[in-house]
Image (tube, rainbow, N blue to C red):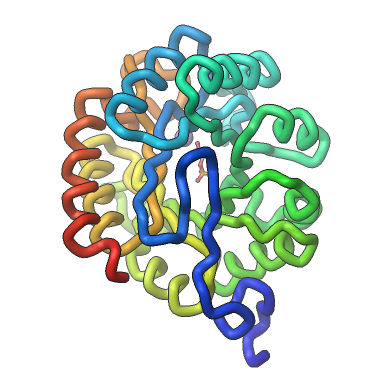
Length: 273
Ligand code: PEP
Ligand code: MN
């Protein structure tokens, strides 16, 4: 082994890891789409969005019940009530659920409801959380820290694999740069770089990279062209009333068009990567 990471590296395993979440497979050349609001706000809200994104072809529903917010005065999520609403979505639509876990204390609870557990950017190097995720039987979406190098991202994934959980999906969600025209900057080149270094699937979250609805659509197309193993996109039925990340949430109609074009782009070039 010549790299600092072992289990996540291509040297250790040449074949791509396939991570199954419901009907979706991440890492097998397909392009599953995870969609839903930033935060769970009500039962009606999640059911409405879930039905729209399912009809458009999304394979996994996302929604945060525990929200990491910059301000302690901002909406922090509905907590357990939000998880119960997500379970209702699964029951009614059949879509598996992706939701964020913020700390070790609430891990058992989130694990009970989630089909895939999201570890957010702000927690990418929360090592006790990573170890706990490594002891879970749920797949994990590990989001890249906003100023993390590829090597740091892979080392964080190593913590999860080292504990025995090999079902890890890496997620590029934009990094902090000097630009002011977008919330973050999508690091397109990390996708081929991950693929070279690691056998783990890598998806892109164009929503948090862009921060602005119109840019999200362009970055989603770019993600399909990059050969990513899927995308995660925020969609809201009333973005102007959203309690978090409304400005970057697509309207359901925009999501339908984006899905069609992403799939067309993936069909042309995505699979060969
Ligand atoms: C989210 O997915 O809503 C989120 C908070 O993402 P990130 O951790 O990438 O900021
Ligand atoms: Mn968000």
